[in-house]
Amino acid sequence: MAVKLSNKGRYGVRALFDIAFHNEGRPTQIREISERELIPARFLEQIFQDLKKAGLISSKRGPRGGYHLARPASEISLGDVVRALEGPVAVLAPDDERPGSSPPDPLTSVFQDLAAAIERCFDSVSIADVCERGVALGVRRKGRPERSTYVI
Image (cartoon, rainbow, N blue to C red; front, side, top):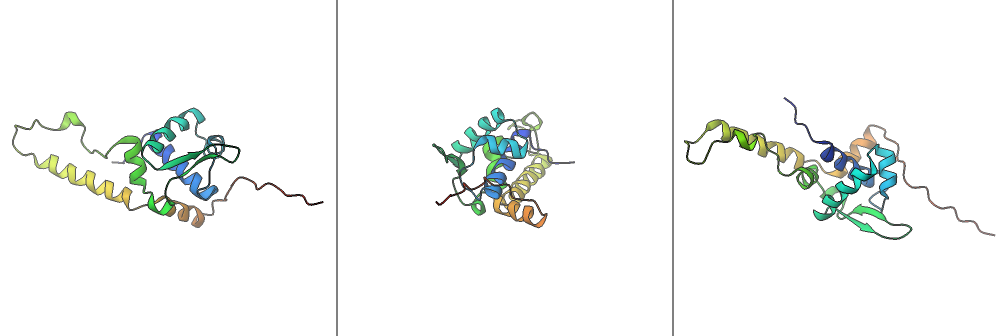
């Protein structure tokens, strides 16, 4: 059995990794993230609305504007991102739960414990941890090129 995130959850994590890794948390335009991570820009805009509402990213207007992390990458966990985009982790579908008047169900209790354990796993990994993994795997940084300054 595998834990499967929706595209929204996976793209959200990848987008925050991109901002933290390639631009070191500085403002990044959606177009840049979309090109590097192969995420449709329109979908990324929707994802960023939810992440902004959750206080995980902020935006800056202007020529050097874009989206940036609202907190240091070390303070944003994968659990924060997943909960912002998909809600709490559930091992049982709501239809699987028994009505409140029925006797206690040991399976429901076990699955609730499993959901809590999965959430703790997501909470134990930060965006900074993912960036460190990227460095360890040899992922090349593709940040925004700095503007050249010409002196005459």
